[in-house]
Image 1: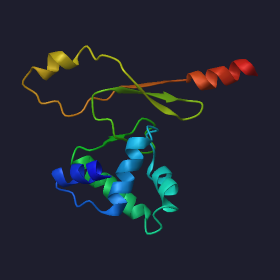
Image 2: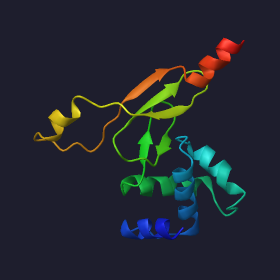
Image 3: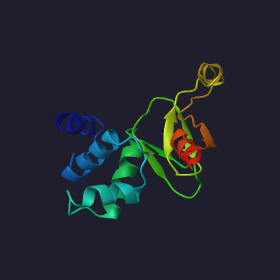
Image 4: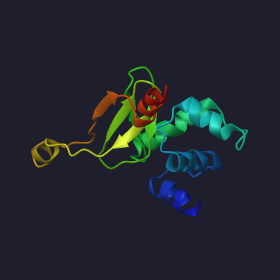
Length: 138
């Protein structure tokens, strides 16, 4: 909890209890959750939490480089605490979003150029191993 408070202070963000709990959830749950998922998971522990607070907190975290916003499906925002460049796999069966490590062959070429790269997004879509296993077991 102290580390999270310190991280928020370093980014110039007031470390409220709600913000700390939201950040803690994102760090512990690598599921790339939606606002609804975060709200539902935390509401019992933080009854003063509102969806507006979750939205606003995630916006502040994003603007300060603590999280990234993913729009893989095109219809919803998902949130990711892992800020190192990486790609994502979306399972078209169960909707899971999974981190995958794929080297981008273009990144090093552009990173040394005259442009400043601030975001890299790579999305793969298919069927995850768990869903494939379920299909085989039918």
